[in-house]
Length: 188
Length: 338
Image (cartoon, rainbow over all chains, first blue to last red; front, side, top):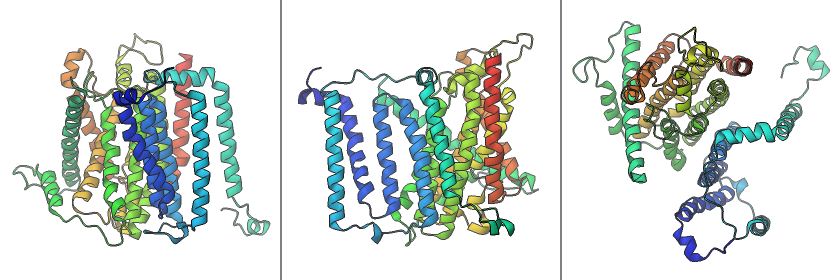
């Protein structure tokens, strides 16, 4: 555990790649919360998620990287966009998204505090520890650890997700009243 | 060799395969339906059989003005075709044209493929929203609903193949189809090597149906249904950007056909020859299968009427997804038993 000096930092090519990914990532994250158009905000979120996937690739975690792309960009963001567009999505600036100054300041304070908290936690946990030469994790190893060592947590998580899904349907679904059933309108 | 030089060569070769293949499929799309409808089809461009018609069309599109409507959100509008094309061309990175002829044989092959191709959905939604046109928006929404619904059976159909081959790498899947194993045992008395078309016939049918839907081709072309939506999310596009969507559609057909050939039809593999020969003949074998599948896609297009939106969703959620789950279960059971 040697403290990293500036000279070491500049002599490692990975660090330049990291900067090339991280700076656009920070910019995209900034624009997610400052865009005055909700669709633009979601598209910047795609940029931010893509950047985090690229960081995972840099760490040799191929499976996690592509899982981020498949699940977050390919499914979650697409559903976001779908939901926004099916309800309302005007082109141009939205007045509702322009908040007064005190809301902005309190939001900045909260996110700043969160940043400091996470930074302190990360620094206390890892400090100047450097990551050993990253090797690409084999997908078979991931599968083996999920389905052998972590099989019970994995199953528990899947049951929890199923319960969440059923709960979502129960909350969203309006049960027909007795009169409607009598009138033959029991379908949604 | 230098990493960057190799990268440039690979990109050029991939584009050199994808674009001509897309042009050939466009030519088939012009000529085959003509034959089916007792027409002649293109016959003038290029002198004989109108072979240069796709090129002439491409040149025509390039000359047209690249319009951005006043009501459009211009930056998103301009970016959308690139996102769609990125999702399509990205799939070719891992498609093996021979034992060594693959841009990058990723360990998580199919998983990467599903992830990168899901980007196209995003591009379609961007195009539909940013055009500032109701036809486009409705088309984009329909496309997204359809792509979400059919992405699931597509993924689940692939799982059966992955279980059978015990790998996610596409090269590994081709090798598994070339070996003498069925469900782990080796039936030597049979002495044939079946591609997964036979063992995974349910998976193949589901995969082919879902591919048609992913490509938004008739009978699944609700997103661009001309008679009600003009051209869906493509309505406002013209010139170069329209060409990109158009090429992207046919490149997408080539890429899905190539994936289907690799997963189910044995890919580049030929019996009785070694790896050296396969590296030479492989691309030809794979492209033959791709063209054959493209022909079938086109044949279906000119045979079936368009499905209604509710029929389309019913088919995905009530038939294809349960069938693919049953297929996974059966494959897993057989794999464990034998």
